[in-house]
Image (cartoon, rainbow, N blue to C red):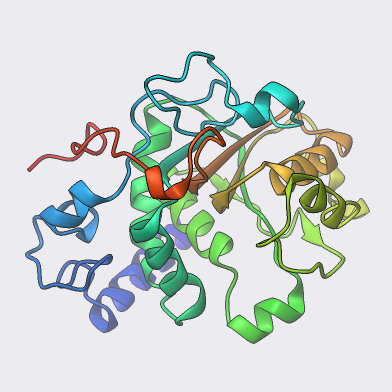
Length: 268
């Protein structure tokens, strides 16, 4: 109860500093507080919502004329996690929104991203025991000021009324940036990077875990985290991200909006 009160007070304090429904979180235009997720009507229709066909394993959006039920990555790769879910396809508007969230000292945007992710995951009726963020190396956290996955995961855990466990999975090696690396390079870059501390394995054993990150690309990071968690005794690992890269069959320049309606919770 005490934690819930403190969390609510924290949310209220943030709203005093960063009113959540005055400006659109994507374009910055003035909006009223009736707009879903603090998105203006234009941006709701601009974002590439992943509510059409999606990969049956990782959750990537699939184009309508693509036949298989798995994306090209999942057709060729075995994943450690059980299933992945995402909210939007990673195109221009999504990239700009996440860039400001991660690199422009706008951690408060994580609350709105978590609202979107909450509406996405409750459609699946998952009941995880624990919510964990993909960890960031401590030096990078110090440089940036926060781990964006942690910001979102904490808010999501509050919305889902689920236990948050941000210290059960740690990054023990600092890696080079994943951007610019191919699938093989990403997998090599992320090997033996994560760990569950020995004194915390009992907190993982038998648990259904929801792993949270901002972007899913090839699944290398998600697989590396899931493998470590499963080795530590987790029952299963699901993955939830705000954005996902496109199926390799098409390029970003050919991204097509699957729907202009967002998720079923959006009403306008």
